[in-house]
Image (cartoon, rainbow, N blue to C red):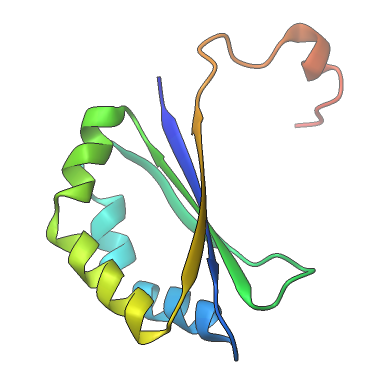
Length: 110
């Protein structure tokens, strides 16, 4: 049962993008990706909103996510969020163990 958290970071004057760039350049993103249980940690930029960055953050289970939340990385993330004065909207999803249905697969080109 994987857990995926979508975090929308919103700022002004390009601050959300600057935040993501500093997260990557500082090595925090690589450190998070190296944590046990991390499946994905990746930023995306919505075409319709230049002041928002979407983080897709996936973990093997709640235990892995809890360990991440207790790690020193969270302090670094919070510090950078404050530096860039970002606000967040969070969505949380739990994976469907059944996977993609046969009917849905008809619409997917791999």
